[in-house]
Length: 253
Image 1 (cartoon, one colour):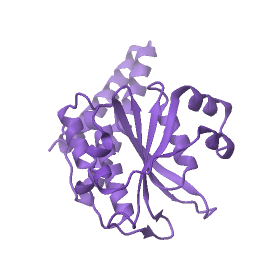
Image 2 (tube, one colour):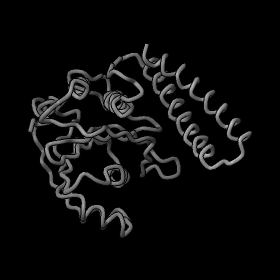
Image 3 (tube, one colour):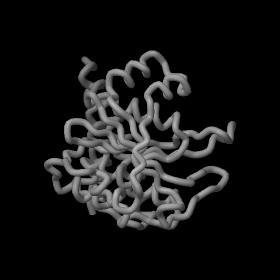
């Protein structure tokens, strides 16, 4: 299996840390439910803070204001016992480690990468709140497809903004978001244009909202016995499909 940290150029630039993280630390400090503890026990083999990027080892400025505190970026490796509960594990880790993390899950020569944008809590300045979290599909490092290869190249150190740690991390998160929605985007493309990135995300969110609405209407059609009401729902569904098609065409330009 390819070394993911070599692919991302992290191991070339930064000294290996390899700090093991005991699962019991999350049990003791994370106020985990019994179900969460069970997930950690059954799904996780090892946790490791593999690399940390900070001002001492990379030429990127810290970013601190009233909302965000980005002093460093941690690259964490999570070796799994089974390919399950990724979102739940990510949520637990991100809620209990305040610094921004690039979490790399490994299982059977495949990986998943997760990021989470965190801001300072307004009610308690000593805590952080996860604003949004994004996760890639599974990536086969033994047999990389074209899309996965383009994605990994796009989050290499040399491909990212080095103005400050927030912008650096936000770019990784945006690119994970794009891959996460590759079925809508069609072809994996990257841009440094912030306006275009936000416009694309807005369109994707609209399409996802329309798709959820469409699912609800289709369920109503299946359950409805009256012909007139079925026809009404079918008209609504057709309109939504038209809106999705318009947005999809804009997205694929």
